[in-house]
Length: 478
Image (cartoon, rainbow, N blue to C red; front, top):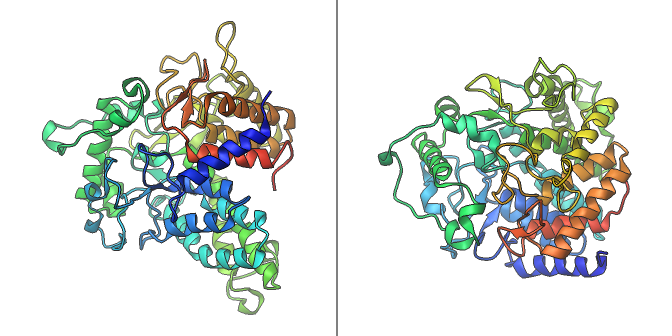
């Protein structure tokens, strides 16, 4: 039986330990810098008892925003020299859009941040302070989402194209096996470098991406550098170009939280609701608040996504969700002009978007429930979802996104199950997460068979999302 009080204390201690005064490192030694979506998750955890810290987390990240709106996936701490690729490797000075006051990477990550900002306000006891924060951060959030839906979506599909597996946050997922197999290079195409993650991670050869994969990751950064991080040139030249299901699903979800943030700001200023704007015209200036252009833009983004989500992510030969075992949502390879027929945990992520019809959600819940139960001798340690099916040929219980359990993905499913009214199923996942973390530590990811913690120790986003789940028992989220 999980001791919830001790679990909360353990998770709060991890966030305290990893706070450096400006931001929260994901994990000592292995991850000494600030990562974009880590920061978003961490801010959610800190929003319950450390409002000021949560605000600083987001502000530090967005202070490194590029002029084109991109939020980089890493903001570097110049004092730390134990991570590769480091700031100097990315050579972001090649781009006129890059910040000149801090080192960053040259790519991005999924945009969870609007959700974090909403939580910061909702959980704060000092609403005037968080209203000011929301007012200042909203234009920056808008610029980031606009970048994703223009530079990373020239097709105007409402869906995001990633140009590197690291942008997906599912770094070595088997989803990328086929697209990566087309990429070839010579030794002279790679710079001299040493993988520092092999030194930092226990049993590294079994748990982290292979050298072949990693070399391709570095080669793709070299291409980005040669393109001077020009988005139009990269969109044309990159050998890896995927309409990403997970990334696009999260963007759709958080666009709705941008609308919630605007509602909060308008209410604070005595203005109208979001719903009132849908039937108004842009030239009716007297009827618009100063946020109305934002609202119209967001509603257009949402409509684009809704028009194209099924077209891009559900193959036409699976006209109905769950029609066959493979009848789930799939990533779309823009270069191959075909769906990537690889089932992973992200195939279920539409459950968290609210896009599914009730009967489709029911079908997906059935898939979700047996995703961690595949017959005699094939059970997950806890009823939480591994990153791939346990029976898939590419499954590996130890290797990063090729089998282990990731708590953040289960957190998304928990939210989705609550949204669709599956409270019993949501509580099963919630308790499974608590058991894993209580018994095996606050680790980066977990062996789905025996529960052993893997990767980084005292991992911040795990602590943060467990804190959120502890503060919100089995009930529908706002």
